Amino acid sequence: SSSLPLLGSSREECKNLKDRPSIRRGSQQAGFFLLLSGLLYFLITRFLFFFISVPTPSMYPAIQRGDRILTTRLYDTGEITRGDILVFQSEELDEVLVKRVIGLPGDGIVIKETGEVFVNGERLAEEYVEYPDSLAGQYLVPEDSYYFLGDFRVHSFDSRKWNQPYIPEGAILGEAQWVVTPLSRFGQVDEGI
Image (cartoon, rainbow, N blue to C red; front, top):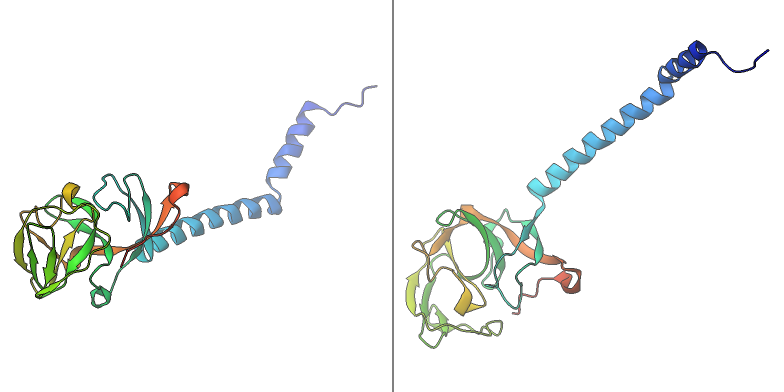
C-alpha cells in the first residue's frame, strides 16, 4: 500500500492554507503598509521637500552640472535673504530653475560692465562669482518679485537675459539645501556668503 497523499487532498490542503486568517491578515497589513508609505512619500515631497537635477553649470561652483539637490519647500517669502539659492518656476521658460537671489522686492540694482553688482547704491561682495560677465544693466525690482543671477555669470541665463527679469514670489518653490548625488559632492549647498 502506498503512503503518498492523494492529488485531491493536497489541493484541498492548499485551499485551506489560503483561507487561514493569518495569511489574509499579513496580506492586508502589507497592503496597508504600502498604501501608508505611498501617502507619506506624497505628503513629504508635496509639503516638506523635493529633489531637482541640475542640467547646466550656471551655479558653478556652489552647484555643478549633474548635481541632484534636496530642496526644502518655502512657504514664507519673508524669510528670503539676499544670497539665498532658491528654486523657482520660470513661466517665461516653462521650467524649474535654481539661481541666487540678488534683488529683493523694491531693490534698485545696477550691474556694471566690470561685472560688479550694486544693490541700492552699495557694492555687493560676491566671493562666490569666479567668472563675472560684462553684461551691464539697471533694474528696479517690483514689490512682489525677486531678481536672480547665476554664479557662473558668463554661462548663466538669468534675470539679465530674460524678457521678464523678475520672478514673482508665488513662483518660488524652495531653497536648495543639500547635494545628494554624486556622492563625491554629498553635503550642504555652500552659499559662499
